[in-house]
Image 1 (cartoon, rainbow, N blue to C red):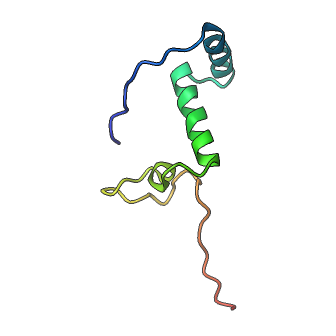
Image 2 (cartoon, rainbow, N blue to C red; image 1 turned 30 degrees about the vertical axis):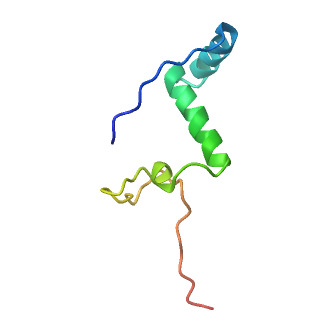
Image 3 (cartoon, helix red, strand yellow; image 1 turned 180 degrees about the horizontal axis):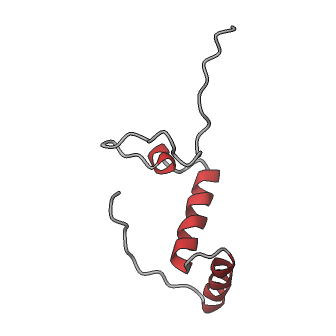
Length: 79
């Protein structure tokens, strides 16, 4: 996996408090929860590259157990 991009993020203190509470409720760190929310939002908007969904890169094809993020493709021989 490629190293994660680090950058400073300034948030309103009340927004941070709400994120901190929500992250705690989900047993995540604030950073992990922000990443989760961003990934979920990008996926819903159809703006998340397929490689991010499957965890694959051009060098590493997706594994068979890609966390069930994609529906398996079945061939139907009874056309």
